[in-house]
Length: 122
Image (cartoon, rainbow, N blue to C red; front, side, top):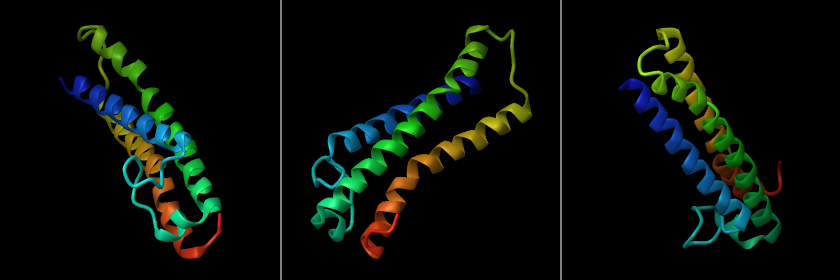
């Protein structure tokens, strides 16, 4: 049962990251209806808008790829019908890996906040 929960969490994280990356590729990160909250400086400057869209597209695509990767080993354990297990250390590794994926996915949004405060720093 725990494996199905872990599988679902990584699948949900991958879908959410993919949708965020899609927003970046479409160039609608700064739009009020489709995008996210960004500082006014980023909304008004075309260069910063492009940078914000590129950041979200790149980093959220990376987070999506990283979150879909563990679906294979977890799916193998689920499909085996109990013939295989993941030990406590393995579950700890999955938890740390999930934390790393969340950090990768959250990075562009924190970077966009600093773009608004600090100008064109990269």
